[in-house]
Image 1 (cartoon, rainbow, N blue to C red):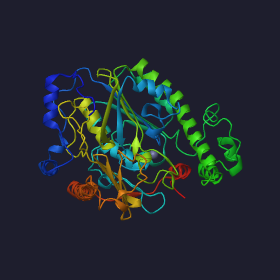
Image 2: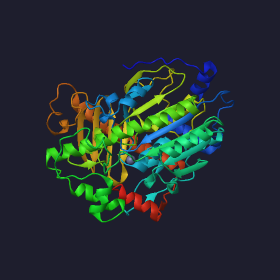
Image 3: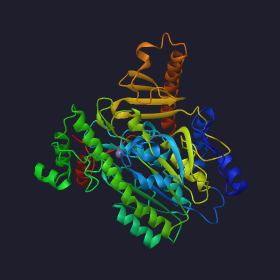
Image 4: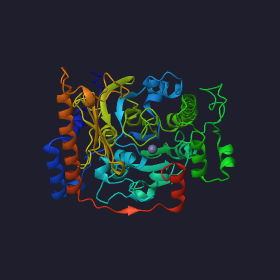
Length: 483
Ligand SMILES: [Zn+2]
């Protein structure tokens, strides 16, 4: 289905090593693998024997809340992302990458641990602002890279990716900081040691406040009541607290008026266009100061605008779960488009595979670019939001969603917008086996949830929570996480 056969540049030795070390998410072998690793103590010694003599650096760029469907390279009609589109033309693009969760902390921790949210346990609980923190038993991507000699540094937007929840684990430096700081770090350190740089930004997160000319780019004739610039919002809110101008922004929006909603989407798209223009500086800094760098651009989740009755990101419909995933490797064939569904839990194994570092035995995801082990079209992609009792599972274009026990069932191939719930009318009489598909998905959902509980149990993970520090609390309010 998708194009394959990336030229290997690391030689047969590495391929053999990767094959030997490969960890798969499904099946009894993996579970036994976890069990054996834990009880034999070999999980501590996961590294490959001899590192690549010319190692690659890695830059991981997470644009929080960037929906794949709002980017030109994913077919969006508006020209929101000309620079990213051009960059992706020289990279590997995953057309159907799915987030593990609709929320920032759950999704990012899945990227760092290759574990589903209910396994790694870092998610919001029903106590405002409290977040479960990562258990010490879990190995994170930065820890594994650091053990392999990587300098590890993170610049993030704060809130729920703050270090206090476990995100700083394995980083030499982990700061709240903007893109400029990441660029300065590259300028000072890019040519020194091999490094892993994580950059995270909320630039396209709501409230959408693009500056001129991006604020009017996609709805230039708008004359309605929505005020969007940060300064005016603060004046209207009579406050400099983010939460106040965020709620002020949304209080202006008549969500039942299609023109007003269209303007909100235009502001979001304008914020994407502004981000796209600004990102050029970071990508250029990488090319200039550290050309031997694998660059990964992704998002933790997308955004919805009333398509299914809600705004921002809490549900598990595709506008929220479908995320960009772009990998530019200096020595791999570029311009590839991979159509199979993949998950952000595959990120850590994929990065380690590209660096010829053996994966952790704890990983639930799999390496995506190993030509000896193609992903295939039968991959199960699973997402969840533990606080909202929401789960979604996609397999072979069919999607099962559960919301507090309520089922929805979609055929994504024929119904990309998830408008026709097949469970309601057709399954009993469907000539094409839809009923069978639903039944198979129910069983698969049960299998994945059983496996998640098993893995968490075997890892012996404990539940502990942390209340955010005052500064973090303000950021969380600003981002709309706390009402
Ligand atoms: Zn997020």
